[in-house]
Amino acid sequence: MENVKIKKLSSHDLNQFIELLRVFEDVFEMKNFQIPSSSYLQTLLDRDDFFVFVSIFDNQVIGGLTTYTLRQYYSEKPLVYIFDLAVLTKYQRQGIGKSLIQGINAYCKKMGVEEVFVQADLVDDYALDFYRSTGARAEDVVHFYYPMD
Image 1 (cartoon, rainbow, N blue to C red):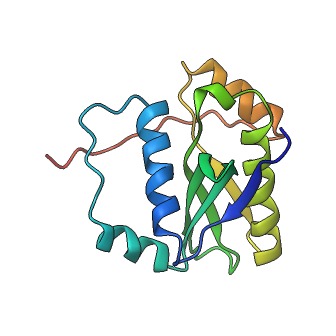
Image 2: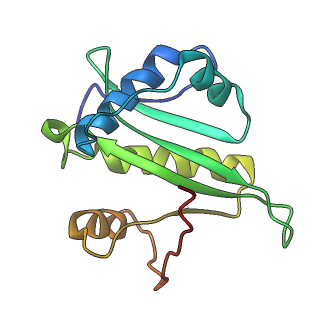
């Protein structure tokens, strides 16, 4: 899609980070979502191991992704985990998500990252097809978690 800009947020872009969280809230249909405090979100943006990329169209954040850097002990090269990626529904299937993937991958390659990875639910055919279409390779794994409540 023309006139869409991909931008890596800096510590000065808190408002655009909050706009992205609203995109996530909408796309992921998050009911009763309460955005954390601005001071907390600012501490995330200030970190050197947390990256946020956004897609901007007409001065509005219409999509984006968040990542965390994982430092390894097997290699000096870090791994980067894409935690969330979303594009507003009316802008989907126009290449914006692929541009976000290209943006994070180019950035990580320049930073000397060993691998960028992302998880998708097996029942989410759209996400599986999307990641395959961007050149990602799939692995069969089972994700376990321990609830702390």
